[in-house]
Image (cartoon, rainbow, N blue to C red; front, side, top):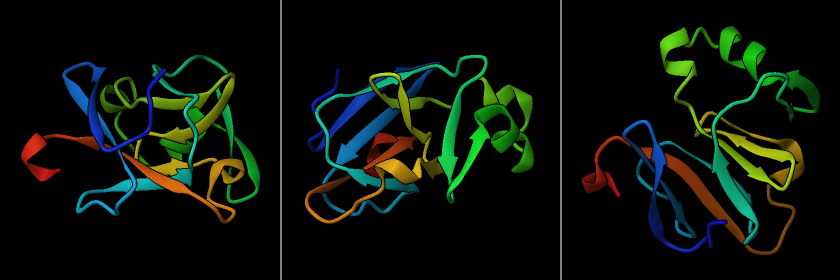
Length: 114
């Protein structure tokens, strides 16, 4: 598990992710605050709710025309068995802020950007 506070975390495949409570200058998704988030690789059959519609992560990435080579390295942010975000591309509607504390999650290509 990753405690969501301002920090950079290694997420595999040479990528680093970050959690911060302040809006960062790089692409990110805004989520409800939770200390139960984990970062993992995409799994066959992964689904999430995007804009109120249940969607397979594979189809979401394909619709966005993300190359297959990049799809394999996009991290999944999960809370227990439920997907909270697909990289910095989209947050699951059930995990977007509904008032109260929130945080941002994203991917860094260079730590100097953070």
